[in-house]
Structures are given as structure tokens and as C-alpha cells.
Image (cartoon, rainbow, N blue to C red; front, side):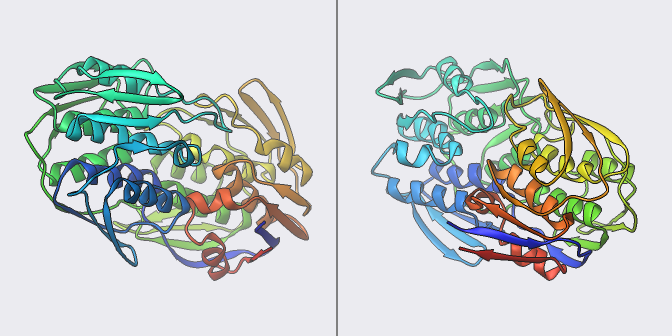
Length: 416
């Protein structure tokens, strides 16, 4: 099994290019199912989750040509309207094929996702939304079986804000008969990026980025070209790493406008930050100050950055509280941080971190994608060697993270 070996204590200096966003790429790849024409995508990240989604689409009959970060997808000859359990169990985002398949082909069979390490993420919002649009849905043998001659526009209210629910129903509504209004919709930048891609394909969408999205269905969509947005979570992870370890780094191909909450918290921790259109520079020449964090749906502080800030708070000056409101089981990295000497107490959905001057290297185990990034940051600041086990989680969402960190001066290598 692959591991990362990290020798802590080095400051981070230099430039790092930010990859395309995983959470934008996955739904946009699924959008290729909505048309017979070719969809040309740029800035596609080289990640395990993206490779899994490509494999799933290819199993259905989508032809995919890859060249570097460019991809051309053609769904002219789809011969299998199914997402099998083998695919969905490794990547819950596979549920995003449900809406496109039902709206274009009138049928879909998609495996229920099953359990998830960081908590329950039910798909009932997807199902209720499609039923409101006229789909007949049966759950049998662990699969969602959906059928509809043509979906009808409907007004759909989300009981809980759901990013994939918003994306699935937005794609389904693009080819529906009439107007669909999604209320209490997710406002994440990745939802907006999908809307931009769908609009380029001929969809009629208003309100993306707000909590009310209106989609007027069209008879068919056509091919288009779209460049996937930068990954705001990768951006935030590198910035927190530099704030914790100290240094002077510049992110290129990045966007500050979708990271405002994270940047404010880093400035609160003592970092000096300057931004231009596509670059973010962070300088940190002292021990960070502890900062309180409370996660909530966008535009509030992202749950996907909670673990990274906990790593920084572990060596910060003072004490901080981290409150997790999105997922009920997203503190599994706490036990591993404690192995490095972090002083963290957890009660319910809140963690109190008392910063210590120095962490000490040890062997630790990654439990999920963002926990992995948290442990890498902790390893960068710990004294001695830290071994991070089960890094296949990292490869799901970070493109060549050890190569990028090495280029910034970190001593990090992949080992078996």
C-alpha cells in the first residue's frame, strides 16, 4: 500500500499551479450524457475520482479522447443506462448520471451509494425531485430504477442544501418540458460552473449562484467547449500548509473570489495575502494565531477546509474551536493528530484545539480525502518523520500533491 513519508520543519517557498476542480469536473463530465454532440473540456484534473467517472461513462458507451488536461466526450451511442454498484461504492458522485440519463433517454438504473466514512449523504432529495418532475422511481435490489417519457417542469424545494442534488436536478431540468424552479438550491461555485457549461450547450438557466435557480427546458442540447474552474479546496489546502509551516507561496491559475471566507481566516491567523485576477500570494513569517471555524454551506466556511485548519490550529498560538455543521462524523482525523501530540478535545460536533509549540512525527492513517490533506500539513510542521498511510484517499482529490509540495521545498516522498 502506498504511503507518504514527510520530514517536517521546512518552510514553503515558490509557485504552485492550481488544478481543475474535482467537484466541478465530475458533474460536468456527466453533462456529456445530455447531447449527441461532442463536449470539449479543458483543465480536467488528473485524479482517481475523475478516472472512475470516465470509466463509468465509457461503460455506458461514451467515447472519450484524452490529451493532457483536455478531454473530448461523445455520448452519441449510449448502450447501457446503468451505474453499477462497483463504481458507485468507490465514488458517490456517480449518482450524478441519474438526472441526465432519465431526461435524455427516459430511463436509468443507478446503484444506491451505500455508506460513507464522513457521514450519511442521502439521495432521497434526488429521488423526490425527479418524482416531482414526473419520473416513476422504484428502489429494488439496491438500485434506483427511474423511468419517464419526458420529465415535466416543477417547483422543487430542498429540505437540506444539497450540491449534488442541485446539480442532478439542474441537468434533468435542462431537457424537461416547461420551467423547473429549484428553491433552497446550493450556491457553490461548482454549481455555477456546471450552469456555465450547460448554458454553453444551449440550456436556459437563471439564478445559478443564488438559492433559487430557474431552468427552462429545451428540446435538445448541442456540443460546446468549457474550461473547468480552479479547485478552491486545493487552493485553500496549499495556503493553509504555508501558513502552518511558514514561507512565501504564490498560487497560479487560482481564483480568490471563491475563497473569501478561507482567506479572511488565514489573515486572522496572521498571514499576509495579496491577490490578482488569477494569483494568490501568502506570506507567513511567524507562528500562526489560533482561529475559530464554523462550517456551513457556501458562501460560509467550507466543510472541506475544516480538517486543514485543525492541523494549523494544532501548532497555533492560543486555543480555537472548530464546529462542524455539515457532516456528523468528520472529526476522524482528530485521533491521528493526537498521535502527533496535538491537544484536541471533542464534544459532539465541536472540537477545542489548544495549540502546542511542536508536533512530533509518527505513523498516522488517513481516513478520508480532506483528513488526508490535514495529516500531510501536520507532517510538514512536525519534528522528525511522519508516515501517512492509506493515501489513496489523497489521490481521489489532489493532483500530484507530493510533487507540488516538493517543488515548494517540502521533504516529502511516496513510498510502498
